[in-house]
Amino acid sequence: MERYPPDPPTDGSITLAMEWWFGVGSNGALILAIVNCVFAAVDLISLSLLGQLLLFHISLRREGITTYAYIVRDNVRKRDRQRQVADARSRRVLALRDARERGETLKVCRLTTGQYMCVPCDPIRSAVRKEERARARAEEKG
Image 1 (tube, rainbow, N blue to C red):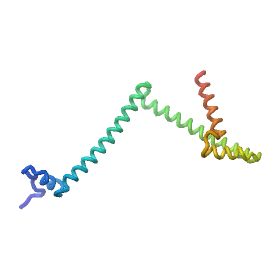
Image 2 (image 1 turned 90 degrees about the vertical axis):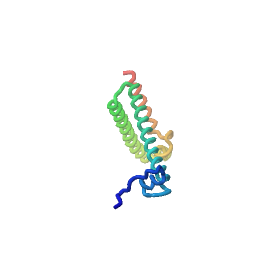
Image 3 (image 1 turned 180 degrees about the horizontal axis):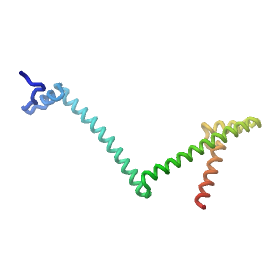
Image 4 (image 1 turned 180 degrees about the vertical axis):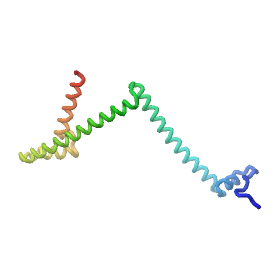
């Protein structure tokens, strides 16, 4: 009676070993090469992610802050940015309504195109940026 799976080949033939492992004949080397390439790709991706994490923590160490302090600081920045966007959006709505009531077509055009395309043309963004710079200077002095 034959055992299942059969004993591995002992004559040293790689083709027989591939056939025993994978159940295929001549394609065994190709399958093994593909499996090795997939594992090498996963290893490279993992290595790059670990390297990035290491560099991130080295930069945190240089700044002298913990990971938690970095996360808190990042959340504060995100909240400030969201507040600025909301403030600019509400200012834009009020400025558009005011310009339309006054019949200032050029101002309506600048406000509309500045919102989507022409950032330097946008009077709202430039006003918000000026206020932010003034606030930063005031914090540096005080």
